[in-house]
Structures are given as structure tokens and as C-alpha cells.
Image (tube, rainbow, N blue to C red; front, top):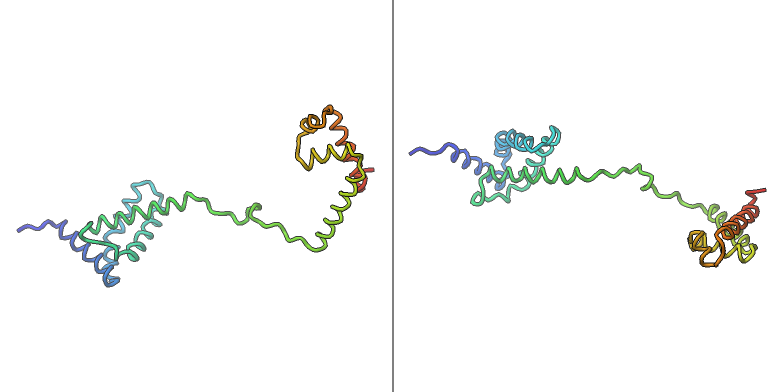
Amino acid sequence: MNVDPRMEEGARLSRLLSAVARDRDQDAFKLLFKFFAPRVRAFIARRGADQSGVEDVVQETFVNIWRKAHLYDAEKASAATWIFTVARNARIDLLRKSSHPAIDLADPALVADPAVTPYQEMMQAEEGARLERALAALPPEQREVLRLAFFADMPHAEVAEKLKLPLGTVKSRIRLALRRIRLEFGEES
């Protein structure tokens, strides 16, 4: 009776994979690696991976075979089918990882603001109090346009509409108010 050599090879590979699963047999794993590594390389390369990507997938495939050999069931699939499925999944996992850009820890958006010192807090409080005094010293009509334009964040046209004033008047009042505040802070002569 003639036995198909491919069936014999398949049975041998299945026994090797079962030995890895059951006994953590390193010699069986080496034989599987020797047989499948070139085939997995070719399989992944045909799917468009570059050389380093191919090597990464091969390495990840055999790490997963070692870790997950206990999940192999010879009655559900051949050793080759199971190993190529592991390789395909390893390729998908690496593609997913590479599609997410690495975080640049030097990105200024990720750098925390420096801690405020007690002296800086005191200076900010003093400047805030000076600003409040300067605002309180403004004529009510100038204070109102500043409040709406800067604190309520309204565009000048909306301030003019709300106060029923010409736009030019609103802009003049804002300019005059800002000049008085700058004088208070010694920024203008």
C-alpha cells in the first residue's frame, strides 16, 4: 500500500507541534522552526511586507507558537494550517501596532507647565488687584464695553448692537479704556 508522503509529513509536523504543546519539547520546536520559518517568510513577503516586517512577523509567529501550542487541536486543523493562521494573525497585529504613531514625549503639548512659585502667585495676585482697581476707576461706559468685549468674549459688532451704540463708538471706548489701564501699569506714557 502506498502512503502519500505529504500525509506522512503532515502527521510528523502534527506530532512535533503536539510535543511542543504537551512537553515544551525544544527539539521538536527547532524542527518546526527549521521547516516552517522559510515558508512563513515567503508567505508574509508575498503579502507585501518589507524585510524587517517579514522578520518581525516570523519572530512573533514562533513566539506565539511556543506560547500557544497547547491550543493546537490536530482534529480541527493540520499543523501547517494552524501555524499559517498564527502567522497571519501576527502580521495583522503588527500592522495594527504600526498604524498608530508613536507618542513623541518631546512634544511641547505633552510638557506640563512649570509649577508656579509662591512669589509668582503673589505677583499674579497683586497684578490682578491692580487690574481690578484700574477697571473700577474707568468710566462706567468704558468698563461696560470692556466687560462685554473681553470678559463676555463678544465681538465688537455684537457689543455695539447690545448697547445700541455705533461700532466706532464701541471701538473708541475700548481703545480709551485700554490706554488708561496701560497707563496704570506704566506701559504707556
